Image (cartoon, rainbow, N blue to C red; front, side, top):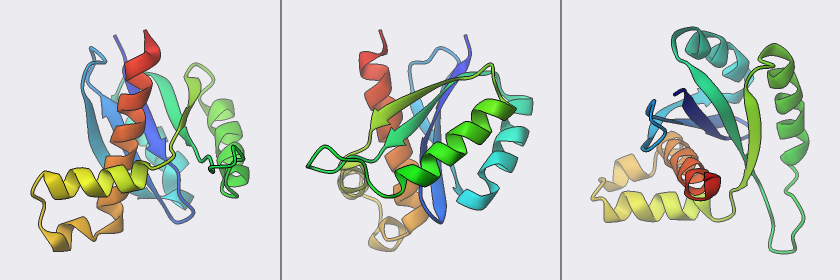
Length: 137
């Protein structure tokens, strides 16, 4: 089987997570400058077999999408043009940053490490991916 990759897309940084080849475990990969995200995927997809990309859907309480959605749609269009064989899915990402911060705290990560925004982005991507995997079947 191929890996599934998820991203927590941000204006400056994007957290990236991926499954193992059996699509059971989600693990953080990296935090990438959003402007270099397509370059990252060119290199990553050259070495890894990936079947799907899960992109966080930034929802508000009102049910509307967040303003970053415009940039996410642009990214998805470029990604799907460049990598047409990879299926793209959307996954609600409401509260993932708060859940990531809490998970890092409960996991015993030191305060200085928890305050690194890049760490929160990676863990948020893991949460998005785990959420997708939980209802994928």
